[in-house]
Length: 129
Image 1: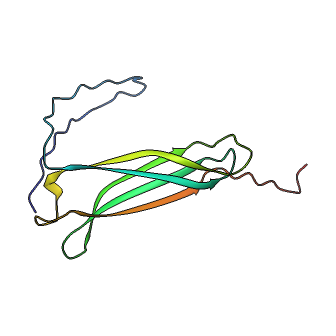
Image 2: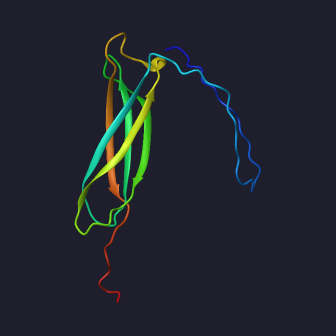
Image 3: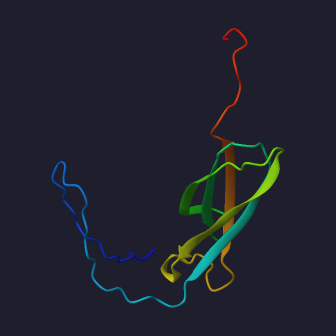
C-alpha cells in the first residue's frame, strides 16, 4: 500500500499558556474521496439522562479484512420530558480519502459499529435518608 502524505504542524505550549492559536497552511481539497454521514436516534431515553455514543467505521478489503477509518464519540444531553422519548443524535461525518480506498476499483464497503450507554444513573440507596 502506498504511503499517504499529510500536512502536520508541531505545536509546543508553555505551561499555563492560556489560549493558543495556531494558523495552519492552506490545504487543497482532494477529489475522489467521500464523506460518510451517519444519522441515528436513541430509543426510549429516560428523562434527565445523558447518553454517551461511540461510532466506529472500518473499511473492508476484498478479503473482508477490516481497516480502521475513524472513531467519534459524543455526549447526547438529557431531555426534560416526563416520560422516556426517542432522541435524534446530531449527524456524524467521516471524511474518507481516496488514497485509502481498498475496493480495487469497485464499490467501497464499510462496517459501522455503534455503541450507546447512559452516563447518568438516578438510582438511590434506600439506606440513606
